[in-house]
Image 1 (cartoon, rainbow, N blue to C red):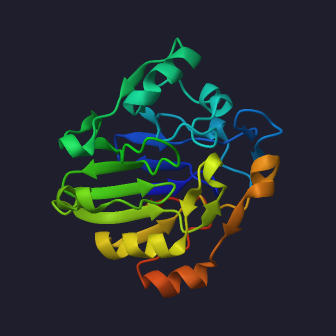
Image 2 (cartoon, rainbow, N blue to C red):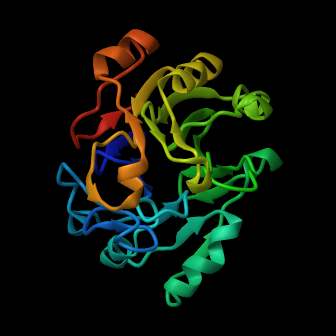
Length: 254
C-alpha cells in the first residue's frame, strides 16, 4: 500500500499496484457551506492538481461538508464510481445523475465493500445532529488503515472489530475547531481527544489530517474557536509513531 496526501486539509489517495482510490477530494476552487456569507474557505497551500490523477478505481466521500464533498473537484476527476455512506447516496446521485454512486458497507455489520485489491467500510456513530465523527476503514488483507477526518470520540463500540486486524495507520485530526452549540459545537474535538484515540487504537503509524489553517471569510470563522497544535507538540503526545506528512509524496506502508 502507498498513501499520499492530496492537499494539506483532508484529501487522500490510497494505492496498491492494481487499485487506486481518492478520499474526500477538494483540489480546486473554494469551499462554500450553504452561503458564502456563512462559510467560504480556500486552501492556504496549493493542492495536487486533479488533472494529474488518473487510473482511479473509485472516489470516496466520508462527510456531507463541501471540503469533503466538493462538486467542482469531483467534476474535474475521472468518471469513476463514487462510494459514500447510506444517507448521502441520494444527495450525490441528485448532483451527479450520470455518475455511478454506491453505498459503502458499514463496519458495525462487519461487512466490507470490495474495490479492486482493497476492502472498505464506513464507520458511523449515528449521532442525531452534527458534528459527524464519521470514519473510513480500508483493509488490505489483514492490514487496516483508518481515516477519521474530524477525529472520533466514540471508538469503544468498534474496538473489538478493529483489533481483529493489524492497524498499520491512523489518520486523524489533532486540531480544535469549536463553534457555538447551535452551529454544531466541536467540529474537530482537539488534540487530547486525538491522543486518546491513538492510545486506544495503538496504530503503527499516525498522520494528521484536516488541520490546515485555511484562508476564509464568513460567520463560521468569526465564531469559531480554534487551536492547531504544532508537529512537535503532536510528537510529544503521540511519540515516535507520528509522522509530520507536510508534502505530497507517496508513503509506502511496507
